[in-house]
Image (cartoon, rainbow, N blue to C red; front, top):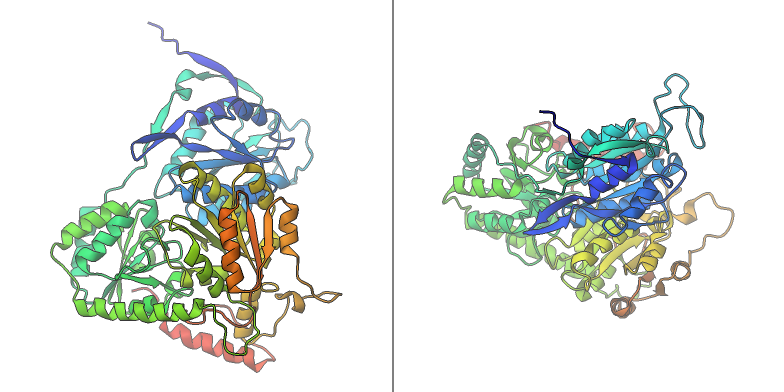
Length: 629
């Protein structure tokens, strides 16, 4: 008997969008559309065919038009982070500069293991009109286009050269974004309006509703047994909690595990807000941007249980933060991360692995003396932060406010469920050190790729996500003047879209944290602070509040911590994006304690003795660096 399957005749673009619109995910028993929509700027490479298809599904897959392709993609990255990788958005741009503008955002997503679907225009498959507008020609390989640049910063990459190809490629792309171990950005090149507009008889099954579930990988029982044996032998263990704890939904299990076995916990930057401030076993942030308390106990620990962290250099102090003899157990859903620095790997979901490891540990509890010691370090650090965020300046001082004072003022007034966003520059360290977490999962400090410009764009994406579940809460953005000048146009987007942001602009006259690094390594200030750049006029400050007002936001300048607090209250009451602008000190007022050693390149030859001394200091620190076990 002959079998005839039913088909639907659609263009490639129409089939792609319809398939995407019929993908769902079940989260806490509630079915939601897997793709939350997308961000798009149209051009000749995506407007006619993909644009037509997206218009038909504009309710199911709402499309947000940004002002810059990189910022749109960054907004999609922040959306996925807010949704704990359980939902994603797409970003689309035309062939050429619109698409290449998004390479940086792809790197942010790749580094942070976050899903985003890139749907980008590409050159014509037929090549009949070559070279077309914006086409970069490779003389010896006509198959290469600018879209090949995404191969190094995506988990899955494909160029659609036939309409039937998406039947295989699109489900693989979605599966990649949902895979806990391989999660990251995916890229589909859509050759301009030939392949996008070509039609095909697609099987109806391709458009059937599909409900996805995030896979939870069970850990291997042998790895659990080995980890339990090693941990039971430890007298001074510490848990390093990374961002993977939140993606696994394991914050409550982390606390339960720590309390059951009496083990102190420290947090990475990505893992900030795994625990709330004030919990006895929460000893603070670790690493180069960390705390004296976390770094002190990490240095004394004989066993490190790393959970859901990729152990990057700012966490490990370029691998000097731990005793050379300390053993590392790494729980991670990704084999790549679990096996770093000859760790004893437990490859599996964080929540399931903590449950299994706790069962294997049985009655094991760490002696109270170790926890008491860690708690004393925590209390000492809290006192330091108290002084750091204090609004009082030294007697007779006329210096501007510090980052820490501004952070403390906002922290004292915000709601526990408000979302905090920061990235790059000096603010990641200052937020990590001085922000006192009021609820789990409420902090997004993008420091995986340390991308300046993420702050406002990411805040916009986070706010779109936040409005879906907690519209009454605020998204609070800390940004410096340098990042603001790099990418600020989504202030306008947020006002247009009714997605209110509270933006704190801390102006220190340039790239002050890099100027600090420059000075700390014996170099003179050069090309970082505006005053030290190649300029032909007197340096002047940008009128950030007027600029923000020109994009439709409410804005004001403030000149004291009391004024910051009053302005923040007005921002909370505002119905639209509110920008608070202030000067912070470029030279004083940094959180100078809590830092581990960090490996940096220094000149081995210099005419400045200060540079040579800095190099000697770096080399001396290298003596503590772990080479493996």
